[in-house]
Image (cartoon, rainbow, N blue to C red; front, side, top):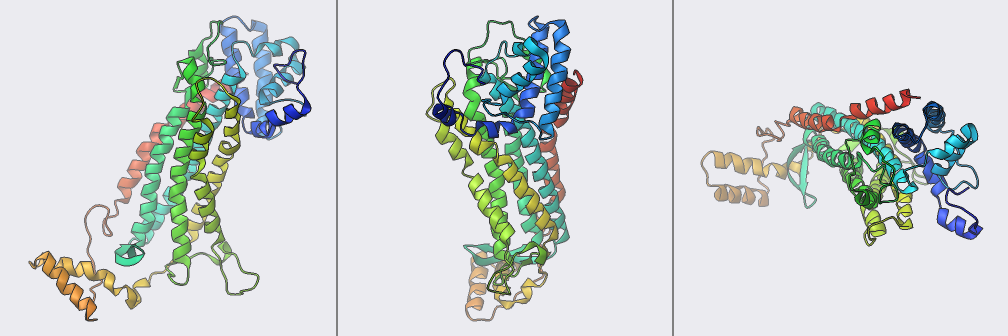
Amino acid sequence: MKLWEKSVQVTDEIDRFTVGHDRELDLYLAPYDVLGSMAHVTMLHSIGLIADNELQPLLSELKKIYQLAREGKFVIEDGIEDVHSQVELMLTRSLGDMGKKIHSGRSRNDQVLVDLKLFTREKLREVAEAVRQLFTELQKQSERYKSVLMPGYTHLQVAMPSSFGLWFGAYAESLTDDMLFLEAAYRLTNRNPLGSAAGYGSSFPLNRQMTTDLLGFDSMDYNVVYAQMGRGKMERNVAYALASVAGTVAKLAFDACMFNSQNFAFIKLPDECTTGSSIMPHKKNPDVFELIRARMNRLQALPQEMILIMNNLPCGYFRDLQELKEAFLPAFDRLIDCLHMTTYIIERIKVNEHILDDKRYDAMFSVEEVNRLASSGVPFRDAYKKVGLEIEAGQFTPDKNIHHTHEGSIGNLCTERIAALMDTIWQKFQFEKVDAAVDALLAKA
């Protein structure tokens, strides 16, 4: 069944090629397609296109389909082109001709737009929640090990004293900045395209503000041409936000793999979180972090994939945009899975509290000695030269009792301030507003 078919049917080969993986991918969108339809028919009733005795049966049947989709029982049948066709078919089977009325005033173009917006809005929330969980665990570890020193590196050369408090805390604060990108992506996503139809509006007196309110959107994409131009733009900008998170997690995974190796031995992954070798009985491989690193690096390519699909298209709808789904829709679950796994391992990681017993790290205290001399009145350049000559002569004896006090340093991690930043960003999402709107819409059935 195709909503657009009249007297001529396309060949099986054309059908196979043009539909592609839409049937499978549209299962991601099924519950959101139903929510959009519930808002749309409520609005159609308000302007007289759905009769009083038709609204409640339509909403009740749509709610049943929504529950099927949420339970993973929604199926797009063989021969049915997409999720929109399947929902309309199910309504028509149950309710007859009134099921055919729900498409008045909209196109599959704005229908898939609203589906994608609702899907992305919910998935961004899941990503944000997973980021916050990892952030919380990193902050806990930062406080737990704030007094345990470790080498800091530049050019992969031992440089200056750092601490596990700083290391864990650095990734926590990085996630705070990533959350800013997620919040911006959420704001861009949370605008209603419904009513733009095929990209040029409708002669029906649609009440677009009503569907905006019913679906909990912040506002609408006002210009109907721009609403269609937003397809691809939303995916690209959301992909940048996902890639920002992925970049932080990939870097953390690299550090964990390196610091877990015997050459560093700064941290130890629990044995039950490592894998072995088929030939070397001593091996305990950090496969989890290696896979996280690879998957997060792949995810950082997502914005470029979005750009390359849609950057040379003029305004209006084109079937090219279908290709966005294949890369975009599964990306959220991939990121969320890696965030959860990273949180799981970070919670169980063991820290080497005796790294600095090894004399190879003595030189990292050279700057501390230079600063002590400078504080006592020795010109900085003279102090630098003195300490440098002692190191060259093998006569440098480090004082490992360091005292850093400024904001963000070893002795003043500013953990609470970073947490406050995260909380401020979190409040801006206003997830409760969306929850209230969706709950109210479902309660109408």
